[in-house]
Amino acid sequence: MTERVTALDLPPVDPLPEATQRYFDICEEKLGLVPNVLRAHAFDIAKLDAFTALYNEMMLGESGLSKLEREMIAVVVSAVNRCHYCLVAHGAAVRALSGDPVLGEQLVTNWRVADLDPRRRAMLAFAEKVTKASAEINVGDRQALRDAGFSDRDIWDIASVAGMFAMSNRVASATAMQPNREYYGMAR
Image 1: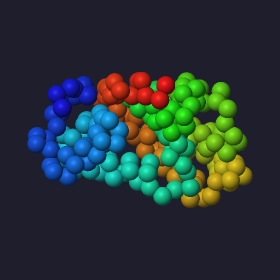
Image 2: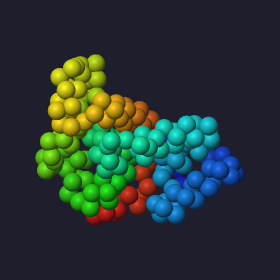
Image 3: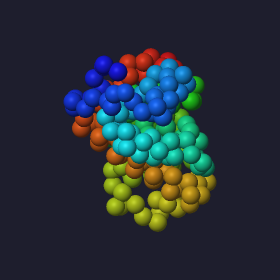
Image 4: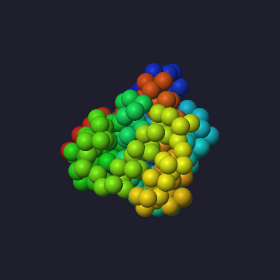
């Protein structure tokens, strides 16, 4: 782990704790890489563990939202926030999960041009509003999601994923976090 992944001088714990090394090995096995966001957090194992627990619950935990839908939210929020790291990493995930490289690029540049069903269009409009103007969300915004077929639990999950990425975007941008180069060519 000699490659610098942020603009900050925060070297990883060396050696990594056994459990952390196992987690990184699983990432390498399943993804073919250890995401730089994990490597960036590895200077403080408690922070890394907190980040991975939140991420894994929001993105992989039980939800009425599919993994693709959660990745779509991540990309739309990251586009609003202009987070280079997350646009590259989660744009690759959208391409891979959807099997559609065009969709991934449309979400990165302007989600409104994508050929989306009304349900996903409502979801992304809500995620965008959470990111831009959460204090302005009202009864009508939540009702639009219900009308599109989302449960109240789904609405919570949309808001939670959008909120988590708003935080992640800010940390990644503020530290000049660099995406893994492999993401650029994935699922194209």
